[in-house]
Length: 337
Image 1: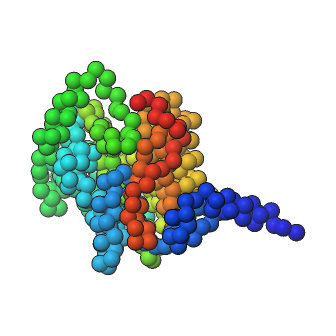
Image 2: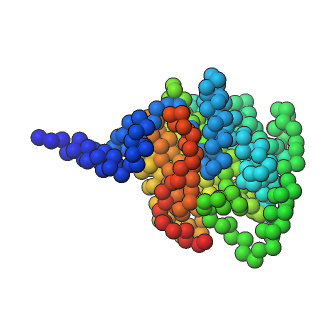
Image 3: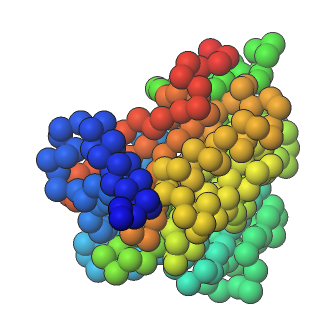
C-alpha cells in the first residue's frame, strides 16, 4: 500500500519542480517538497542594499570569521552609507529633525542585544553587539544607550546629512505624511531597514537588524527592529527570521518569532512567511496602507520571502552567487499607490 504522506510529499515536489525556471533547476540545488535547499553557507537580507551587506558577510566567513561577526560586519555597510536614508549615517530624521537609530543582533547561542532611540552613533549594530556580549541586558535605550556606547569607545558623529535634511524638509511640506508603501525603487524613500540572516558551513545561524526608522516619526518612536521576536529572531535548532517595513504591524504580531515558531511546527520557511503575513492581514485592520516584508532561513538551508504588497526584493547569497530576487506578495497590485 502506498504511504499517503509519502505520496503527498512526492506530488508536492513534482509540482514545485514543474513551476521552477530551468536556470534554477540547473544550479545544482536540491529540490524538496519544502522548497529549494541550498548548500551552506547562505546569507539573505532585505532590499537591494543587502547585496553589499551580503558580500561583506561572506568575506568575513571566507576569512574564518564567526557567524556573529559576519552578520554584524555585513549590516555595517549600509549603516555607514550616507546615501542610504533608511539606515545609520544619512538616515531620515524624526519630526524634530534628529536622527535616531534602532538595532538588534542575535547569535546561535540564543544570546541577543539591542539598542533603540540611539543618537550620534554611526553603527548601532555594534553597540547592540556590546550589549549582547558584555551586559546582562538585552535592550538599552536613549541616553542610556548613548552613554554605554561612549563608555565603550564609540565616538559621536552628526548623522544628519544635507541630502537627508532636504528630503526631510520636503516631507514636512506634505499635507499627507502617511508613509508610502515600500515598493520597487521607492523602498527606502521614507522608511525601511536592513535585516540580515546568515548560516555558516557548520550550520550555525545568526541575524542582525538595523534602521533609522520611520521618517518624520514622533520623537521617541521605536519600531520593531530592535525588539527580539519582532524585527529579528534566531533559534539555532530551527532557523531565523527578520522583518522590514512598517514596524508597528510587526510589533502587533511578533512577526519574526511567529515565523520561527511556524517553522518549528513543520512549516517551510516560505510557508511560515506566508502564514505570518496572512496573520497581519487578518489581525491588523489598516494593513493595506503599509508594506511588510519577511525573510526566513532554516537550519537545513531553505529560505522564505513574502510581503503584503508587491515590490519587496531581497538579496540572496548562496552557492557562490549574490543576487537580488523578488518576493511573492499577498496582494498582487499595490493597494495605495
